Length: 308
Image (cartoon, rainbow, N blue to C red; front, side):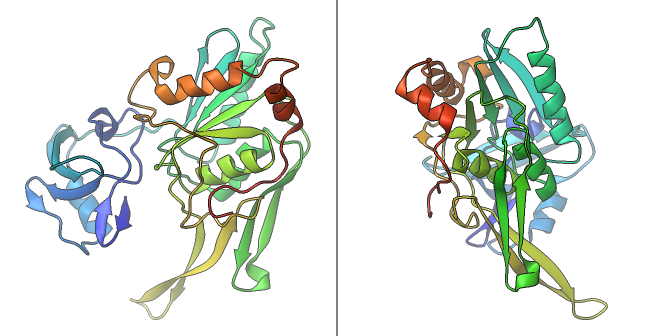
């Protein structure tokens, strides 16, 4: 969930969950639940409580979607959600599609195992990786650093810039690129946020990847809860996250290198997804000896996206 101008909306949906199957999308604003309007200023917790219910029961949502005339009404059947973090499948003989739904403890290990299985199967080499971070709302900061580190030889992954010197920090990658320079296409959209934006920005700014899709959400702040009494507290933004190229991630989001509109990772099979197809076209255009291949192999150095 997210808040926009006092309204409660969708930040991202869970792969394979009731909302994604009903084509609820990042950016949709919730106008009503079971026909009862959601007033501006309604607390996110209250909206979540109204959405919850026994598995098997149904809930109706009335949504407002940018670019669509009129309201959109969908019905969801509630169920217990089992969140998977990583899914991998081949795209032809030489490209791997890797979907990461969120960043939690163990995600970096899941990615490493998926890549090692592919690299160790039949001795076939990998010519490209499609890393799908669309509709990924983020997760743990240190896990984002671990994931970026899998594909980087060295360099800054993210900077945390605080109000005071003691609140600032810098997180860097160690030696050892698991793919040894194999080109990466990172897919992003309006549901790509927080830790997912850290990974996307680090790989792009360090010259390891190109971003394809739609602009990301723009969430990159660190908040601290300061108790005022036994029953009251205040939440303060104490630091902001900066990409290696200098962009402040909070509020601006990442601009893709190639804009391609798509329905998201749960909309179609990867091979039929317009954004995945665009990524494949870019990866397979990187032939030995071409200018694109040379640029991809040597990297472009730190660079900033939108708001640089």
